[in-house]
Image (tube, rainbow, N blue to C red; front, side, top):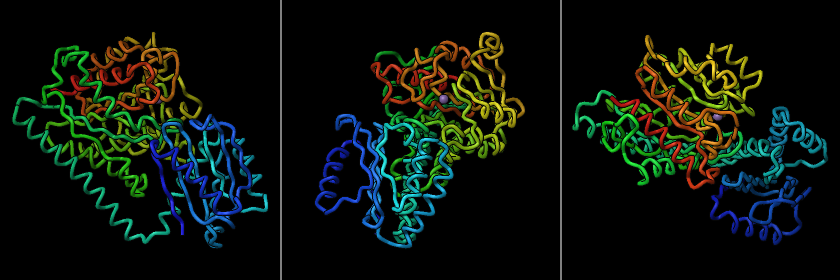
Length: 463
Ligand SMILES: [Mn+2]
């Protein structure tokens, strides 16, 4: 009865054209309201459409992450389902904090039509509402297919994904052990996940770009202190967790996060490999740190470089948001100390949550005073080691424009290297997150920045 589809960038244009044609040929259009001012390649439209449920028969879901455009169309015709949707809309409205969206939703809810909004974004205020709607629709469409059928398929896909990580990690572990002499060795694990971002989803495409830049022939394989990244005792690679493929089977974020954690543990099982994770948005740090801490059997100290504290209790109703990962980490007890460095976009909640969890927040406005301390850190003693999480936006946009959240007044690249290179501690895991290739307009410049962070982290971790 209900059908949902997701479209990638390449098929988007033709699918939408076909879709509009179908609607026209299917008789009277059920649109309550249609606004078509600005929309990407069609010549910049903003579109909001509303459809009465009486005339609705199917669900179509289109998504173009590269342009942050969401299109959501529900057709149904089932009275029970309509009721359920009305109820969900009610709950939905309650959660929407955006005034403009709330006003609009209220007006709709009080109208005589039972309506589901269709959002084509670029219309910033509606984007979050569209996302929530899409999440709901995912659940809704899944509910109409035999549950066993879906679950069996999901299990097979997750198992296959884990098998590939397991076998690659095993091979790389064997290789490093055969070469001999390594106590700790970094191994790349890509997590191409972008849907928990509150703004742009480009970080989902980051890992291959970072890898390309790591091995770019424009520079040699030596790290600054003289380790060679083509030495497997310094750096190996176990590939990516196939995040989009797993999500495509309808797996929810609880299971996706568990799969990420399991993947990290598979890397750690292969002594002396240690996970060096390529994000992805910052939501991935939660399942990664959780895995590291669980596998090692205790909390770690975390050095977190970021413009943002990412410690909201939940953001836009999403507990897995990239703005909430450190709230999950702290409440889970996976970290003893959390040092946040580079902070310059923080509100009252960020500070309150910081106090609540005993976070050591080092804001940019006092960096010149804190510099000496931060460039001489000693962490991880008495716990299981140190985890380093680098959000590329810790850097000033002058150094790294290819990020979703451009926040002036940040660290220089050398500031970051000084902090990392002088850090004393046993690095048990690390991530580099939030590089957004879709914002990297200066010839892959930020990819090189992310890659150098990875290279220097690899040098730091391996011994
Ligand atoms: Mn950030």
